[in-house]
Length: 113
Length: 112
Image 1: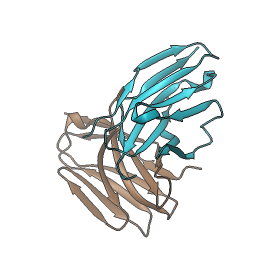
Image 2: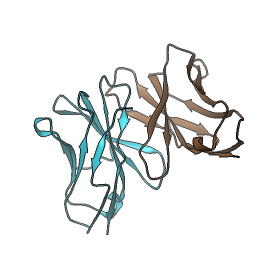
Image 3: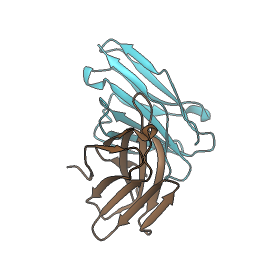
Image 4: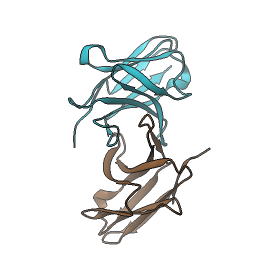
């Protein structure tokens, strides 16, 4: 049973456009949602994260929008650059649990110039 | 961001042998994790470790797996004996308070 789902599986945008990556979850007990960026052959790098008490988090060109009622969140990458081409993973952490992360399947983003 | 190191980057062994994967977590972090990733798919949680003890392990953490961090040195994942299905990339992560987890570059394990 997939507890964290991501869509689309792959996404291509033009340089300068805003890429929108979607994530949904099932368990109301999740309280923390990080997004990770992973390049081929490397480990995932923490990009930006949000707590379930917030509905928006911005960090430069990266913004998370969070809708607790619908159990959905999205990562917006503004002014996309070719260097943003990577796989992005949404993850979720159980409130009060052992701090393990449950990952989605990832969205492979390609930014064309 | 904070750096987690993993040694070795690649390991090839024969089925049935023992392997130890080493992780050098961020120095002041308290929580340590191992995750498994197959062929660029999603990361799957194996185990986490805090205050010298395993806090939680998943069903992927078979009896042949063990973890330890003796005297604040490397955080290790040992597999004994290895099986073909253990071939994957293993990522170590650490965090200070159980929220922001920082991952290492991974160890690619190939079991022949």
